[in-house]
Image (cartoon, helix red, strand yellow):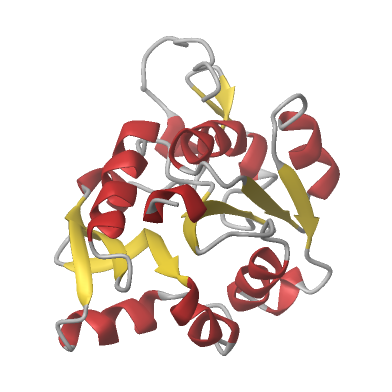
Length: 205
């Protein structure tokens, strides 16, 4: 089996989105719900399957993903922070997964081709974490090989994996993938304004 064949995706979509003022996960980006856009991108890059972690707006998120070939994992502890969603996603990975691509659902400028580059960079050195590099630092989306999963499970609170990625980068033990689009997350409805007409939904991979 080639290294890339075992890559599964974890799309994080459990937060309350209080700064957004509502269920950000289902807000429209060019005619497609943010979480559906993220799921399509992940499906294009992750042959071993995709898990979407739900939480605060689980019913709305599930509705926005109807018909896609993926799994839903509900995190009842979502209010305790992002780390619990990472652990939930890891626990729901399909059998045979050897690495996971972690993708927040609020990065609409990140496309399937971007994740494909990230996955290819990881597959070239499958023992190392591969992470998006933008604004001078690493962040998600990122690919974590199975050997790094205990470190993800050990995280606490709402900081996510940024500290782990920064430590790996400082130690020279990180594959960097230049991905400026990953720096444009959605925090408020204003971040979705002025992005042009709907393009329609991309086809599933």
